Image (cartoon, rainbow, N blue to C red; front, top):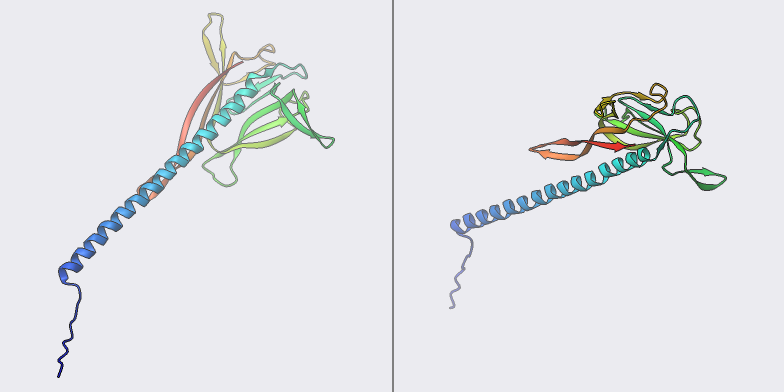
Length: 215
């Protein structure tokens, strides 16, 4: 008679402990890699976002102000206060007329903030463009959104006094200033650049920049 022995194979306790330990190390390393990848992606996204938005706003406002003209259409040729600015500019604009897109050289431009309809923490930066320049410097045309997450915007108007010292003013109306322009306009902007993770929460990342445009 042939005798058959049934053999059993399995894991020892030590082997199970080692397997669990190795799996724990792999899971921990995988989590670290994934978390680092996510944070790096968000960092790069915020950098790219900020590197595109801020220069674009500064470039647009600078081009408008650099091409400013004292056009004699009405009493006011330049209206500036701490929160808004309106002027005539030769920075080219476009209008759709007679089923064609036409280049317009003289336009009215106004920059101002309005309340955000979606986020009470921020304001919306608006640019009003009127390609049919007339004596009413602050109405007409179309207002478009430049950026919808502005914390604050302030203008200052710089001028040289008789001693050649720079004087800062928070208001400049051409009718009050004998039809003259300030020597320069200073623009201070605080705006949203992206989200930053702090522990379990996310916080808004903002940046404040001040730039000066010589007229």
